[in-house]
Image (cartoon, rainbow, N blue to C red):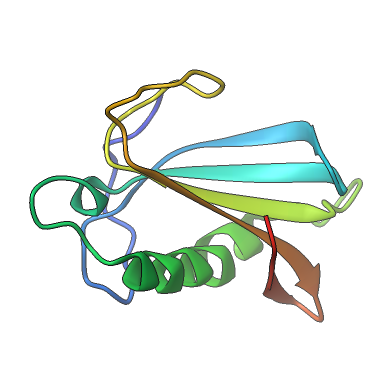
Length: 116
């Protein structure tokens, strides 16, 4: 699993690192791109609020994920942004991990939040 690269700026100012992008993954809406991020501050004794994490995920979709959507080939129907306080391999569970997930559609060049 990748991760640990340069921090990706987010509105909360917390340290967030890109882990990986999973392509060609079918979600309920069709082709889905999943952008996974390590965000240690969402866990621990003094975690970032869920509201701050939601704002960070919107910023990650708009500023990080959307510019990385390929211009060639099928367009994804959905982008999923996930934050985790520790590295958890995709598809596996960790009862100790704090994780947040948000789904977005792409409309008029912007990420639009969807009920996940």
